[in-house]
Length: 182
Image (tube, rainbow, N blue to C red; front, side):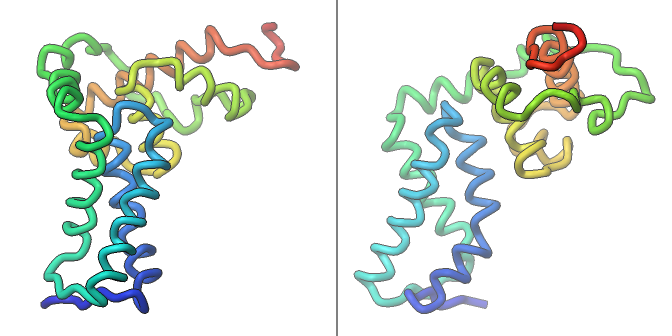
């Protein structure tokens, strides 16, 4: 069943596709700071296309928008970036984060509740891009560990281990005014 896209239904299309497009851009960008620019450029490009052609007849408009995002990312970073991102998630890295996690460990409850989000985010943005992506997808987009694992093409235990280690690192290294341990 094909759908007709036009300027009249642009907002509905935007609302329907925003989360999936955002997730795609987060997973494929080299820096979390580039995500908003790439997302905006993707939808501006769609708007320009609709303005020029008046309407589009598509079977799957989500895939069409992801295609626009993919081209924007490729232009933004160039071919060298593509080769680099694929090597980031190689199978060699999977064993690096192997760690025994207690069965009673609850990520939601154990996260540092007394720390302010801004301080944590500043600290996380200094970390490896893989860590940034996992935190963004887990805490901002509320994705499940299995969904993050599928999107980033790494094992679910690796995602969990990265979260656990980073949370432990945050507890040790991020101190906020009013903290008992300051």
